[in-house]
Image 1: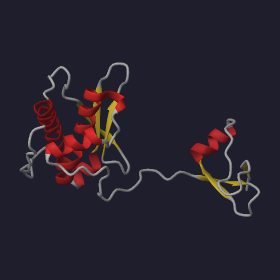
Image 2 (image 1 turned 90 degrees about the vertical axis):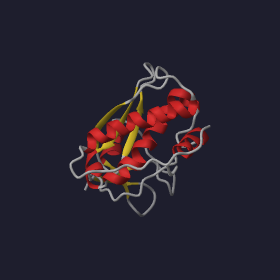
Image 3 (image 1 turned 135 degrees about the vertical axis):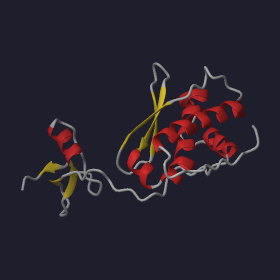
Amino acid sequence: MAQPIQHTLALDETDDLQLRACELAAYWIGRAREITGASARRLPVPEVRFDLRGRAAGQAVFARRTRRCHIRLNAELLASHSREMLDQTVPHEVAHVAVYRLHGRRARPHGAEWKALMHAFGVDASPCHTLPAEPTRQLKRFRYACDCHEPAWLTSIRHKRALAGTDYVCRVCGAKLEYAEV
């Protein structure tokens, strides 16, 4: 593998951050091609979407059948923490795409191949970001009872599944949880 090259970016106040993120995705895919010797056909530039919400900064999405990949970025975090998102999150997600395209599903998400590529990029190989982010939704919680004296609480997602027939058991006593209507 090639020696790491540290990439720093110069941001203007007038820069369009989403365009800059797309340009950086293309830059990092180019670097991945240089490092791994892969062709443009094997490592195409992924589409970058800005539709991610909540606490996640970025996400690499893989289509198993077509092997097409795209990257989702949190536009709100990009606007509020542009330097960190462009310097860390974009290469982080591009490395996921490159590793998936080169090694398939046998490579672990933050495994040795991904870490080696991040090291070659000259970017910190942390699996999680440290940006302050708030969840976009609060799930309603439903009270369930079991053999314990303390109630168990299921989110609206699991509550709906329980009503449809999925059984949940208490982590403490192992008894089946029963909906306790209030």
